[in-house]
Figure 1 (cartoon, one colour):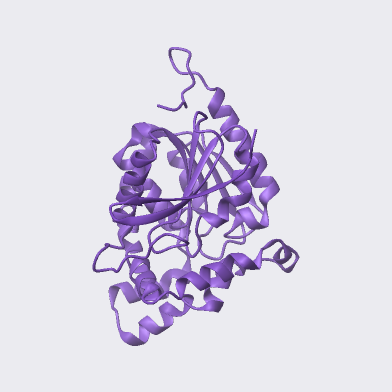
Figure 2: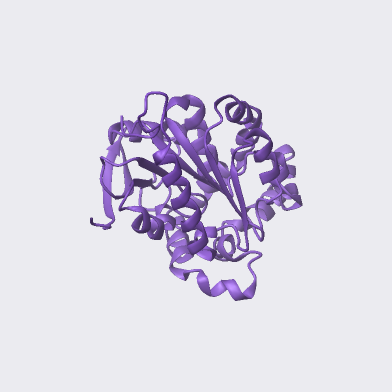
Length: 303
């Protein structure tokens, strides 16, 4: 069976969305949602590795990667709107049942998909996906202060992450020296190149400010976890400089059957710990694929 990744575009509501696809559409679907500042590029190795048994799709959000960057006057850059847009994209490519992979910004986008259509979600793979206050350590204090009391001086400090060095730090911050050689430089080079599109950094700053609305939604996500108890695999790097791994304890409270693994890696665990991530993810998906429902069918199939 081919493990070739296909690189596709499709127009959704006047916006050309770039996405990567691997595997046979007849197989169980896995939706891969990227974080900041990256795109579907972060999933290429994983898609090749899993393509034999699953159908994997990874979109670039509007304004990210190789998707269109519509003017903010024509597209509302909020996590809620991006989530609705991805929902429309899923309908257009005929995916109605899937395991969802939540990483960084992919977490607010994906969890809102979970709230809107819980029956479509067959499982969660959470890789440094923030959904609890405990994950927001002191490194968030300056940003939270700006949200509450914005000034131009504070904005300059907070916006420092929207720079070439800031983009690189998303991959390297907190990483022990012996793991740095595992991180491919083309990732942040591509990210930074795309972020230099006119107006993109301004959009990225405003979207980051919308993260506070994601935080306001935390109680709703927790209700979803407790009510639906989706099967979950939670992976975190203990050196993650942006979301503290102690958050996984809170996930476990709401999802007591979740598998939780703290790795010797960073925020981009697919870069620093690919082999271990692959073992965990493939095992989780295989168990979920084989789990029968009340009438003997797989609980995870293509509708």
